[in-house]
Image (cartoon, rainbow, N blue to C red):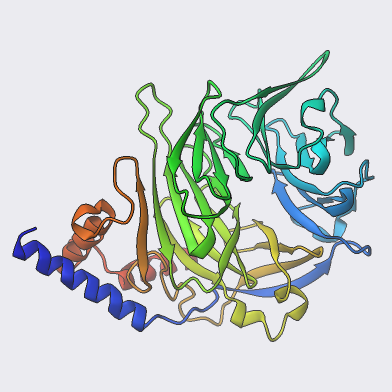
Amino acid sequence: MDSGHFARALCLVLVLISFSLNPVAAQSAVQIDEIIQLTDETVYLNALDSDESNVLAIGDDGVVLLIPPEQPSGTETLVPITDEDLLAVDFHPAGNALIVGESGEIIRYDHQDRRLSNVSGAGAVELSTLTAVSWNTNGAWAYIASDNGLIWRFRSLVEGSEMVPIENTKSSTVQAIDCHSIIRLCVVVTKSDGIALIDADHQISWIGGSSVIWTDVECAFGNNPECIAVGSNQNLATIHLDDSIDGGSSMDAVVLTEAGGEFTHICAHSSDRLMIAMVPFGLIEHDVTKEDSFPWLDHADIASTEDEIATRQVTCSWGTGIDDGWILNDRGRVARFVPDNEIDNPLVSSIVGYALTVVIVISVPGIVLGLIFMNSPSMQASYNRWRRRRKGIEPSLKDRREERRRKRES
């Protein structure tokens, strides 16, 4: 490394340190407008999934709630068919859903008659705790995973169900699986074995990230070829998908050091917007297209006034408009969020950017974990963007925020 490169690298490090010592205070872009208790019974919810017309929330003791996205007050508690804890749910492209849980429980939700039924022929997993489920791109197979790392591909046939184990799995708990709606790849996140991809031939390949406890993953809609995983210590990974014959799928991860909480779930709101749920209660907006994240609902802004919501864990959330939506907590309360019109600039700070510190932790394949600036393409790209902004070639963070604000108001 020559002296010029070293000087520039040192300057960038000093800039990042200065931001970490002077973080921009978070401020919510939305406010809580209404709170609804979905059921009179005590429930303990673990997960939800949504399609265009319904939200399914599942939990302990076999509870399944069918929630109208626009009017959660019309929530229906479906007749239970098990007392096992249910842990994961995924809608099929045709409208039905598959639910999995403890003791190998696999349940089908039929959207036409709004009924639950047991899936037959799944004896191979009856002693397992099933922790994740996702239908593949065309809905022909579902991938079902367990707390001991095993993954099966599953489908229903006229004569019963077929479950085939996937080879090359590992041993730690599979926390979540999500399959892209167009690109023929699925992303698997685990507790201690990192992140893997499953291709159209049901082959699994591991791409890194074993130093992080990954908690959830969500793939973007449409042609956007990214999935976003979240994990311990405020890690966020972008998995770039490529299902071509010479596919070069890869992963980059960052640490959002000023996020204000630990990441637990990630939920889709639109084709390019995801919401990251945190403990303590809070949300971060992640823009997949821009690869940028913004404070959305900060815990400090609601802790003193919305105690019945803020003291519980977020199960997940869903959107009903550009800036409107609902947040479900693990005790069956939903809170509607709406834009906070009293905020002069609702997008007050960018998390993945220059207002708050970002530490590059993973870049795979082919790049060694923890490389310093001169060997890190991500940090070099950040430095190049900084230089372009100084020359007036690229808009500043302030300009980007103002442009984003104008678009929201138009």
